[in-house]
Image 1 (cartoon, rainbow, N blue to C red):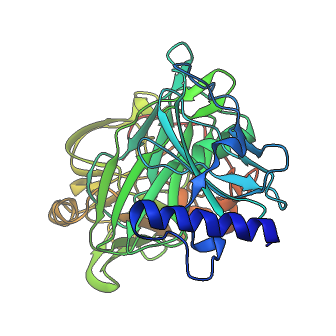
Image 2: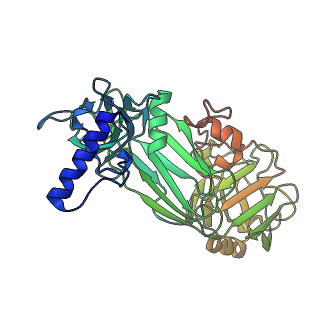
Image 3: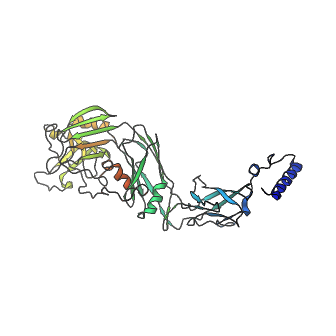
Length: 416
């Protein structure tokens, strides 16, 4: 500190002692112990003035004025408490935001500085951003709806408009929050331009609670595209229920939390109609379904045609694969595959399965001659992708997924 600066410090302290009977300086006059001064004359802010509103397209920028000291810290938050990330130059002369601002909200910016003598300065800046009412809004619809689900249930996010640009996809991903208790690492995967799925590396742990929300409201996603408000969902994960069907032994083994609770004789798809291999997830349950061969491309009157009432039908693909009661094939259950792709069992066993399994529970088929379950488009085959390929479908963690995308559905109606 210069001799002149020391004199100013002593005079300042003396005046305060006279005026208030106390000093704001330390005994040794250390400037770091002084009350912060108003740094308004030390910084330049590119925000709006008066009643004007800031353009959310433009980043915030704060610089020092005329070499007067340096900026030591900047904290910017919006009205909901969201922080605005930013970068401070090494010499402390410039800070700028590094993510888009939200439209139609209020911001508070707290700037800390120090002068040439090391004394601390403070300045609080407030401003509002302009509305995005005239711009296209991106809405997110999360699925499934709030409730309790099995360990295989992925989270889905359906966008109201396509997002193709990788940078814009990154903005969307970072704003879609999935908070779990206990904490577990997961990732979003872009199924297509309007659909994302989220899952962890392994199945959800029983008892996990999952809160899903979007922080996109008011955030710029892309050219003339801004985030809109979305409804959050909360999921609870139940017991780990898995049904593993071995098509070669015609047997289904059912596990609850890793322990066998039932073994059921079944029949699966016969040659030409083989049941898909791989991991599937229960989509829904229907006590009664009318299954007709014409809906899966089998002509009426052929030797393969059928029109049957089916009970206790647990759906695992949108194209018509179920676990259901098949009393007409009881003689083959446990010994032969005679169905048109579904897993058939006795009425009593199908009733038990129907009452035991729920949406999100795991149904797996092994040792079938059928095709592999598609990851997307025909139900939830998400777990058939490796974790590496899953993360490759993220705009934040990876790039372009190596695995297949949304599958074209060849069959849209049920078969037995």
